[in-house]
Amino acid sequence: MGHDAPTRAVVLGGSIAGLFAAKALADAYDEVHIVDRDKIVGLREPRKTCPQTYQANGLLTRGVQIVEELFPGFTQELLDDGVPTGDVSGEVRWYFQGYRLKQQHGDLFSFGIVRPLLEYYVRERVQQLPNVVFIEEHDILGLTATADNSRITGARVQARGESTEKVIEADLVVDATGRGSRTPLWLEQLGYAKPEEERKKIDLAYVTQHFKLRPGVNALQGDHAINPVGHAGLPRGAVFFRVDGGRLEVTTYGILGDHPPTDQAGLYEWLKSLPARDVYEVLRWADPVDEPVKFRFPTTLRRNYHKLARFPEGLLVTGDAVTCFNPVYAQGMTIAAVGALTMRQHLHSGASPDPIDYFHDLARNGVDAAWEMTNIMDLSYPKVPGNRTVKVRLLNRFFKMVQIAATRDSKVTVAYMKAATMVAGPEALMRPGMLLRILWNSLRGPSEESRQPFTWQAPADIEPVIADTELPRAA
Image 1 (cartoon, rainbow, N blue to C red):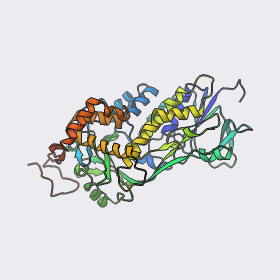
Image 2: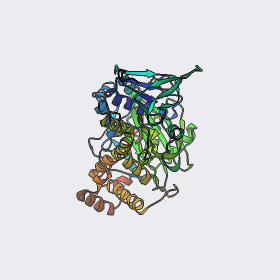
Image 3: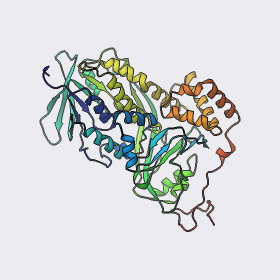
Image 4: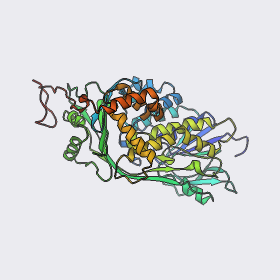
């Protein structure tokens, strides 16, 4: 590109990570082009080419804070549109090791929103930016580079149904194409080393379905969500929460080949077997509004770009294309938001970002901590293959103590959830005062209250969807 030409950034991939990146780039470049293989503008439904968009996707509190920073007023916009919200430590019923944590508001805001709708809201905000252009229904073929391959100069794309390719010239190309990213292959073709990859085989699958409570049924008792978390003794769990349109979304998962079924009767039986029966008890009073849909996730994956010694200028990678976490911990979208903030810090006016510096900061700003958390949690399952170092074993024991202590002390719950939602680092749990609370309460074992099944009175005049003789009916 000539010096007089407007500066241009090209984002490959138009889902969450690509949209966040485009917002960061729009402040530094004259033009931002987002290339995607689908028709995405105005879309509010799941995309056929993105099977995961149908499943529950959580934006952790840290992610909400970054989205608000990128798009001021975003949270209010969702509230105005009636999207349900809740406090992660105060209005979510958490079960760890099968015991219920004590709840307390921790100023940890979260949305109850289905992924396609969240993507729609973010996309609408990006579309309002005058210098952003969406290039839809285009396949991404590869990159173009200078003769010595030291700098990327653009992206090769091809419109669906056409036989000729075209080049979009760019000062910066950002790969936000997700897990299937071809950057490692492209690097090799350009004479660079591929990033070393870390993987952990968890053989996870999850099933998502939406329900509507029968009128007059208040089965959630004011809670926003119910999350029975899988553990070593029972590696099955669920995330279950209120979402837009007065619906309930349940995503239930199992690891190491123990996968939830997609037939309705089988799914109910599976939900009954979870570490807590609350989700099943609520769904007895809720009608399904769609079919159960399955998604498989064989391995976690981290591409260690920050360890490379050489990398072409004019190219960055973000989101799942860098790291794919265990989706159960809902870190992906928040790390995509961290990626956009990191990118913004490296976009000094007129100067091209240094890719290696960016990758180092991305690791430091969030990927390292989130990846370690994913590994520690995954390795708490004895059959997940991996290196259980002394540190991993100690941290697993420590988190078990935290979970037991949180059944008695709601301040421990708040501190734990601050770490889980990436608002604070895990080291906040290790401050002297908090350590004392954790030690004292964990030594006493799970509270009596946390062992009791959560009960509510079912209305006598409303028929349940599933009859169950075990539940007492209200008089």
